[in-house]
Image 1 (spheres, one colour):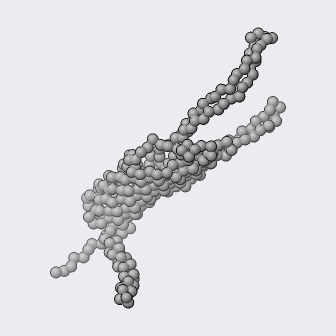
Image 2: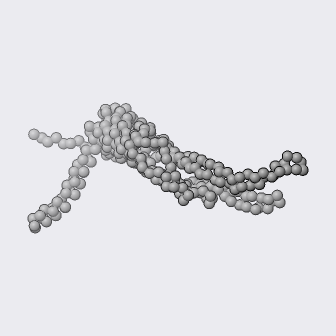
Length: 286
């Protein structure tokens, strides 16, 4: 029993140091670059809401004039009017963003990269004050309309790829990478007037891509990467809901003409700076 406890303690203390040492050796063999990224992503698909209802009107008396001084009353019975409404709400989108990345490339040109591609929090509002006056110019009513909107977007992309060519001598190199990119959007629209209802939503998406890369060497430590990113959406969860207590749960939730997998194309420009050069492995003397 004591031997097992001793062995467990040794493993607990030695394994973290061993892993750190391995990471340190691995890191020394990598070209490490940091970058400022400029990204463009297309807008997220819109959500559509559809509802229908009926309204019944009461019986009324209507006076119809056949002559200037004579007329007849006719009774209009109750009638039912059907209404159908369709509301389209553009989903929260971040078209252009500035982010950052860190890249590790070994001497064979194989690289790993982690990039922050979307990070934004915004708030906007619209308000319209409406005054109602009588024929004497007196204010008889005042009401206002408008909305307040809050949006947030967050996404990062992991890439595993390879550059072709010699980074020391080639001004232009090409590469290719596979990537995974999870994204999260949140959205809230709050109306100012009491006759409208708020919308609240949260959307999570997971995209995969095969990315062609072109890199231009600007100086010994500075380079510029251009990427075309054909994102294949392989999963999308969440929705935007109208918080209207009159609607059913199905009516509250908007729907999209969207089923994964779906393809969209994004673009990225990266200005890189190399902060570490890979060390050559020492050859052992025979």
